[in-house]
Image (cartoon, rainbow over all chains, first blue to last red; front, side, top):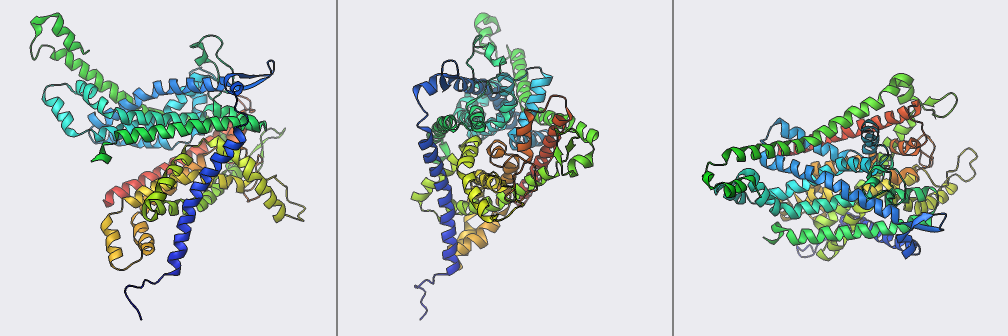
Length: 287
Length: 321
C-alpha cells in the first residue's frame, strides 16, 4: 500500500516545475534570439568602409567612424572625471566617516542617483551644463552629465573592494607609523584596484549603451574632429547609440543593424572582461 | 614621492621622528578634505537635480494652470489654441509600468527560483550569463527589435481583434502592448538578480527544516523560501518599477506617437517618450518646452517616491535582522 519509498507525484509541483523551467528558458531564448537576429541582420552591413568612413553624400560613403570616435571621447573623458570622485567618495565613506547623519545622507543620495532615469539626467545636463554653464550641445556637456550617472556605480564597486581589504592591513600599516593618507595610497588603493577596475569597466558598459542622457546634451553630429583633438570636446558629437536611434527613426534599418551588431560585440567584450577580472581577483571565492 | 621623504633627503638635520609632523599633518588634512568633498558630490548632484527640475518644471504649472496640465486630456501643444493636458500621458506611464511588472515579475521571480534552487549546475552556468548579458544590451537595440519583430506581430493581432471595426484607428502595431512587452523584457534582469540574491540569503536551516518535515521542494520554495525573502523580492519589484517607468529610448518608436488613453491597441505616449519625441522641435523658451519639463518633473516625482519606498523596505529589512 503506502510506502515511504514511493513518492507521490503532486500535480501542482509538476506544473510549477514546468513554469520554472519555462521562465528560465524564456530568458535564455530571448538572449539567443536577440544575438542571432542582430547578427544575421547586421553582418551584411559590416565592412571596412562602414567602420572606417564617415557617412557622406559627397563621397557616397556610409560609415560610423565619427560615431566610434565620439563614443571613445565620451568614454575616456567621463571615466577621467567620474573615477577620482567616485573612488574618493568610497574612501571617505569607508575609511574616514563615522556612522551618523552625514553618512546616511550621502548613502541615500548615492542610492537616489543610481535610481534616477537617464532621461532626467539628460534634461538636467541640458539645462545645467548646457545652458547655465554655457557649454551648449557638446561632448563635454555629455561627459559631465554621464559622470553624475555613473558616479554611484564606481563608488559602490570601490566600497565593496575596500570592504574586502583585511583590517589587519590597515592596523599593520598604521602600527608601523604610516600616516593614514600614506596607508590609503600604498596599501588600500593597490589592494582595492581590481574592484575599482571592475567598476570602471561596468561604467564603460553603461556609457556605451547610454542614449537618453546624451540626446539632449552631446547632440548627434556624426563628424570627425576637424579643429584639433581638444577642440572636439566643445563640439557636439553623437555616439553609436544615438546614431542607431537616428537611423532607426529614418527607417535606415541596414545601418541600424550594423551599429547594433558593433554595440553587441562591445557589450560582449565588456562582459567577458569583467568576468575574467572578477574570477582572477576574487579573493573570497578562493577561501 | 611624499613630501616628508624629500625633506629628509634634503636636510638631514631634521631627521627626527617628529621632524615633519607638521607637514604630514597638512597633507593628512588636505587628503581628508578632498575625500569629503568627493563624497559630498553625490549629495550636491541630487540636490541640484531636484532644484533644477522644480525650477524648470513648475513655471508651466502656473502659466497654464495645475488642473489644466495634470488633469487635462487634450495634448495639442502646437495648435493655434494650444492645450497642454498630460493626464493620458501620466496614465499611460502608470498603466504601462503596471502591465510590464505583471508580466515581467512572475517570469523573473521564477527564473530567480530556478537559478537559486532548482537548476542543476550545468544549466545555471548557462542561464546566469544570459541574464547578465540581457542587462547589458543597450536600450536602443531593444527598441530596434521591438519595431521590426514585435510591431508586425502586434499589427496582425490588432487586425484580427478589430476586424470589422469602423471606429478603431489602426496603429500598424506601434501600441501600448508592444511597449509593455519591451519593458517587461527590460526589467527581467533587475528582477532576476535581486530576487535571486534575496532567495540565496534565506538561512539554510529554514530550508532544511521544511524539507525535514516532509514538504516537497516546491512547497519549500513557495511556502518557506519566498515568504522569507519577501522584502528582497519587494525591492526587486520596486526597482523594476523604477526601471520601467524611467525607460525612454527603447519604447519611443515602439509605442506609437499620439497621446491616447492607455488601451492595449492604442498608439500612446509615456512620460519619457513624450520628452524624447518633442524636445527636439519645441522652441526654446516656449510654453511647450516648459510643459515638457513639467512632464520631467512628474516623472522625477514618481522616481523619488519609488526611492523612498525602497529605502523604507531596506530599513525595515535591517531592523528585522
